[in-house]
Image (tube, rainbow, N blue to C red; front, side):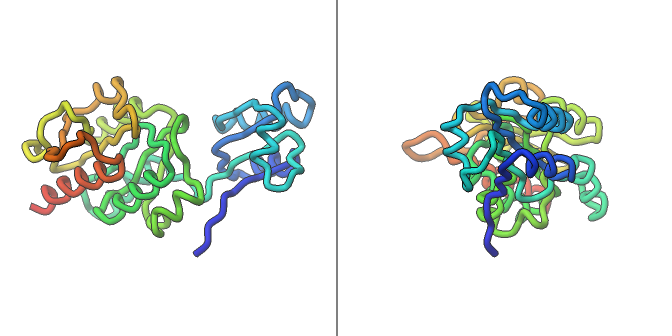
Length: 246
């Protein structure tokens, strides 16, 4: 299957995309442009909390595939997002304790795609990502997921820390990956659980880490002290799988 980036250019095309309910991840508008059609697009974008970027004409020209952007370019999600409630329902439908991946600022679309693939293979019921400062469901993510994106729901939320708090009310416990934690083999990771993976460079943010019940460290035996984010997700996920199977 071939995937392509969903780039929407031109004022009418962008406005129709919003009004049709298409999920728009990012909107790029020519800085200083505030005429009637642009104000209408901005109103529609704010209704869905779309990320809005005001940029120079040179930047728009660089992003454009057609050269006819009319000062407006939108990036649409290659796939529709789910709701967090859909992920919990997927667990209920299978009669299983919820197992959720929570990604705190994964920016590399290849990492996101690889994590969605791992989530599917280890039986997780869904993946939660933040709206801002993170990769969305682009064509690159879809391709890297090797088809898993068709089966594993991905929800996009405004605030990861608040979402964790809400999921705790549903009975979930949360474990995050961090070098300063306890060795993962010593932790009880059974039952309803959320696995939190942090940003490629900075790791899990302080606020999100404070919301977690466990901090798990992956044993390191080599000369460097960190794993790629998607690899770390896989290692911890399969420790959770091992414990769920026992």
